[in-house]
Length: 312
Ligand code: OXD
Image (cartoon, rainbow, N blue to C red; front, top):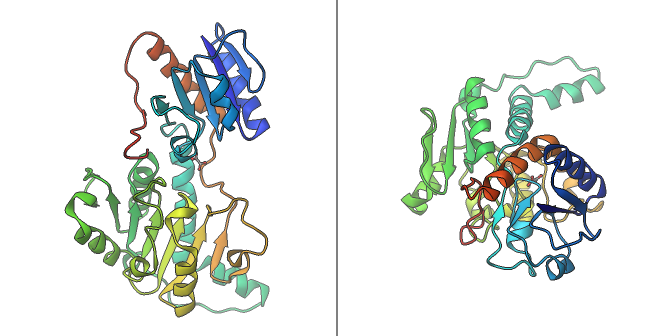
């Protein structure tokens, strides 16, 4: 088989090339725009340029080199009939659980306050924040949402979730879209720490506007490690200002890198991280992609195939 790697980051392209070539020694593997002798059978990529699909017209599938697929589902030049396959976990769920647990624990144990107090050589014990007073609502129950929910529960937090369709969640409440708007409202009202982990689709874009964020419990904390487009920036800022929200941790933004003059950078109630919550690990990703290519070549079904209408 012929495989082309097309990645907007050159070092990631090289890591994928090495990892795939090691797992599929018989395959011919190239990094775009290097030419193969014949059109490629499979592509592995992230943010391919428009010309990519003009040249690669015989692809049997496009593997997303990350969990998110909006970069390829919404690509203007990608043929509608091209199967898109996303990475499933591949070492990302563990990282995401660690990231979210760190932020939730940090918030509930007042770590930031102590950092500040140490700077001022101030000894003061605040009233503890009890986990029971900070019920966590996880929006989105894919591989990552599920691991985040179970990890936080194991740490003693009250956790519930919201998913597009109802899913069993190890004894935790799962609100779902099928119940209509009422279920979403019930999810919000039950939530004091909101963790956003759903893909960016036409249904989730701008979903967390001011009206929605206002329905979270007073003093709520917001963590967004999914995509910046799910939360309306101005709504978040307005509710931090009014005090309805007490803080936020943001790993993802509408424009990345986050522009230096963006108000999020210097906001005292916002923690910014540079889209690192769950990094794609090329070796783990390549294990999965190589196995799926083997199955596809053998005419067998694979998991992780994107449903275009749904957007993930
Ligand atoms: C991804 C990401 O989608 O890193 O994999 O955001």
